[in-house]
Length: 117
Ligand code: AMP
Image (cartoon, rainbow, N blue to C red; front, side):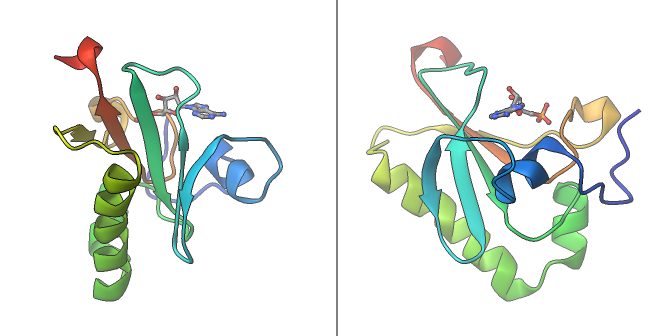
């Protein structure tokens, strides 16, 4: 069962951040990394993650500093601009077992394209 209370540094996104497994980078700054989802559910499907270790949105919103949180949300806008998503996009984050979260490192899904309409 997924554990979103204790960070597990063997999760797949932690391995991506350590460059132990490959990813298709879309955007990066000092605190945030974004890459293409391996199983896209829309024409554009990007995963946006903090570089620091947070298990879920709950953990991030409770424990990340205001600066860290502001930087994370601003980066989403920068990614949308970089990808020229001028007509909108969808953001989702799954939290815990009942929210359908599979990878226990906080992430937003950014989706855009016909298949989500
Ligand atoms: P969630 O269910 O919200 O935890 O979403 C996890 C997402 O990670 C899914 O959309 C997967 O397709 C995606 N995913 C899993 N492994 C990888 C990987 N190695 N590279 C990119 N995306 C991945």
